[in-house]
Each structure stands twice: as C-alpha cells, then as structure tokens.
Length: 607
Image (cartoon, rainbow, N blue to C red):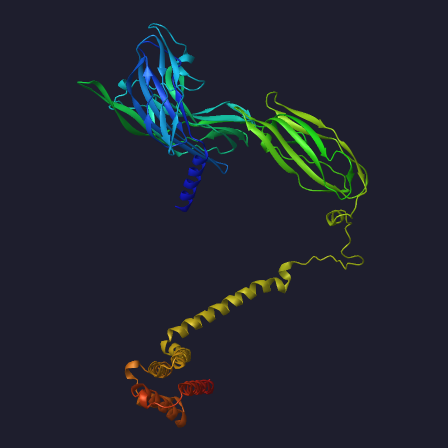
C-alpha cells in the first residue's frame, strides 16, 4: 500500500508539473447539410463550468458530450502520464458560405481559459472536400466521431469496432538497431475512460520512450474501415540478442459511449450511455539478425552511422601535476546513448582517471541522434614530449550490413615542468614487483595422499564429538527442567533477591506497611521454593521441621523463625514496630546466604 501511495503521489506530481492547455479541433471545410464535429480538448487539467461557443451558419445537433482519458507509464525508472477532457459538439451546416465558431471557455484551477474563434468554409451541396480538409483544422487535429444516432446502446461493440494494436516499424533488424514500437487505439466510438491494467513487456530490449499526448485526434483507414485513432505509447527499442523477440499483449479497461435514442414532441433525443469493456492488444514479433562475424577488435557495440572527433583542453601549455582533458566526441544516429567508452592509450607517465560520459541526444521518429562526449582526465607526472597514438573506432551500418572503421588521429603533447611531485597513484602504478622470498625455499616432492594424514580425519571426528557433547548437554537440560521441584529450588534465591530489592524500595520511601508485606512474601516464598513445600501447607512448624531434616543447625533455624515473627509483628502492629528497616533487610539477606551455603555444602557432601 505504501508503494502504491508513493507511485500515485509521483504521478500526480508529474501531472501538475505539465501545463494545462485548452484547444479546439474541427474540420476546415464541410458540405452544406452534412454533420461535423467540433471538439474542445483540455489537456493536463481538471475543468469545470464549460461554456460552449456561439455559432452562426450551423445548427447544434448534439452536445456537449464529455469524455475523459488518462494514461501513465513507468519505464527505466522514469514515469510519464497525461490526461485530457474532451467536450464534443455535433453541428449541421445549414448554409453555404462561412460558419463562424466563437470562443469556448472553461474554468481550470480557479482561472478561466478560452479557445480562439475560427471559421469553417461551408461548400455547396454536392461538393467534395479533400480528405485533409475533413480531417484537420490544423495538422493532426481532427476528431470525427461517428453519428450518435447510429450508436444505439443495444448494439454490441465488436473487436472490429474497438481494439488496441501494437505496430513495429520494421519486421526485421540487427542487434542494437533501432525499431519503433507504437501502441495505438482504434475506435469507432467515443471513449469516456481509458485505463491500462497491464502494459506490454519488452523483454530482450533496451527502451527509450518517445513522449506522446494520447488523444483521439486522427482518422485512419484500416482494412477498408475508418477509425478514430490515438497513440497510447511509442518507444524506440534496441534489441540486445538475436532471434525472434516478442512484445507481449497488454490489457486495458475502456468505457465507450453509446446512445439511447427516442422520439418526443420536441424531436429525437439521444441520451449517452457508457459501456465498460476489457480490451487485449495483439502481440508483435520482430526477427533480430545477429551482427556479422568476425567482429573487428575496435568494435564496441555501436550500431548506426557515426562520426568521431577529438579535442584537448587546454590545447597547449600542459604542465606536470596539472589536470588536462582529452575529449572523445561521437556524433551521429543510432544507439549512441549506449556506446561504450573506447580505450585510449595514454603514455605511462600520465596519471589517468576513468572517463566521464555525457550523452546529448534527441529521440527522433525512428532512432536517436545527437552526440556523446567522453572526457578522459589525465595528469602528466613528468615533463617531455609524449604522444597519444592514433586509434580506430568501428561501428556497424545496418543499411549496408557492413562494419565501418573510422581512423582517429593521434595527438602530440608537449609537457613543461610544473610545481609538485609525482602522485602516489603514479608511483604505485609503476613500482617494480619485489620477490617475496629468495634463496633456498626448501621445496620437495610429495606423493602422499591426504586421506593418509591423521589431521584429515580429525576434521571429521572433532565436529562429530562436538555434536555428541551438545546433544548430551541438551538432554541434561531437558531432564533438569522436567524436575519442577528442583528448578524451583534453584530459582528460590533469585526470586527472593528480587523481592528484597522491591522491599528496599519501600524502605527508601518510609512505607513500613509495604516493606514488611514484601519482606514476608520474600521469606515465605523462599522457604516454599527452597524446601519444596506447597503454599497450602506453609507453616512455621512445617518449615522448622523441613529445615531440621535438611541439616540446618538449631541456631540458624531459630534466627529464621525469629525474623519471620518480627516481620509479622511489624506488619500487623506497625506502631509498635521498632528497629531500622535497612537492618531487617541486611538480616534477611544474611540468613538467605547462610541457608544457600548450607545447601551447597550438603550437595558437595552427598556427591
């Protein structure tokens, strides 16, 4: 639950960070007498109080109908999300000429946003508008929903009316060659809600997601049928292995809008009805070709088309013990973000650090382009003339199916004397290896077997003996714990000491009643546990008899009984009690210690 809350907060943060926009989508041309849609789209915001536009030259047939869509994704540790609200008005062109659509407005976050007014050209009846004119008021902006009158609520929505399709830009590519995956929604119905429940998986690929704004803003013809489409997800895939790789299908919860149509005295009325559907996308397969063998030694996995250049900072005036940077720049198109840093051979007199890589790329429609900069920081340790030798950079061009080698020229470096001394890192790197031991090492041949050595078997015998000893000890502990009387006797002294400690607390507070009550509990409890006398049979006569049978001398028995009498007298007649409570505590502790010592002596004599 904590993880779900954190992800929800993160998604809401991303949505808030995106600026809300309110735009209008409509055709540029319509034919007189035909119906057309005008859709007002609110992206990345929650609107209220929608105010429709004023329209001249057209009659309102239906609307506004409201639909909501939301999508989110989490790829390579990065999250992206988008939401939109669409307010669709259906009009019928009534007269040839110009149809003026005024500004619509909506309240978002306490502020009212408005669209721009625009004009639609109404052609005479019988004219034919171009497909581009019917679909776009601006490039990629139409939303031609079907006529509500034909979308009755009793009509079933088939897989040909609404589906999600995974499309690959290429059926076959090489390893590390980019292929674009597009997940697109095709529908003949207006969508009120769209929620992915299981995103397709891209096993065997590295993924670079292309930001998209899901919206039903295009019309496409597929298999002779016209659909409204929305790109749900688009990403560049880089296959990491050869063979046949499959993009698994995804699951989606979709709510479509149908209409209950009925006639009244005011005309035909359509009431929108939502229907919830579960949609599963197809699977997509790509054949991945292996890179040709043998691979050049200078090939580090770059696939595409690239150029290489180098730079030195500072370009001149190098001095010992001062840091400088050798910059290796790879530019072009391909898997540029995943190119490994090539190995540059620096002079041994240089202290060299691991390269720092900075990729500056753009996600194009089919691949990544840009450059990656690799900075090699080095510190010369000695003055003189040095050379960074020429090298080669090899990449694979999938268009030609061949490896291309780029010659990288070397650089001559003049290093002047600076202030300082060679670093410890450099001295350790160039230190000679000293022999650990020289002379006669006393080596000899041995043909004995390890099983003939007694120490080999000792490693088996010792753990076995330890296991037996542990088992015997454990059995002894179980036997002792099973003897309840003996365990009570062993714990008698500890229990009494805890009670005496509690009595000392009452003494420090001057509470005589509590003190003597706790003292009696300690003395009676100790005698009951130590002598194994049940509480119901505790009496002074029984205690005295058991102590005598135990072997306690008469003086110690008398002192024990006197102490019990003293505490009982003080408990029931505290006003007549005399003596220091701390002295009573010391006396009780001394008697218990003497009784314990007799016990130990008697045990030793019996053993």
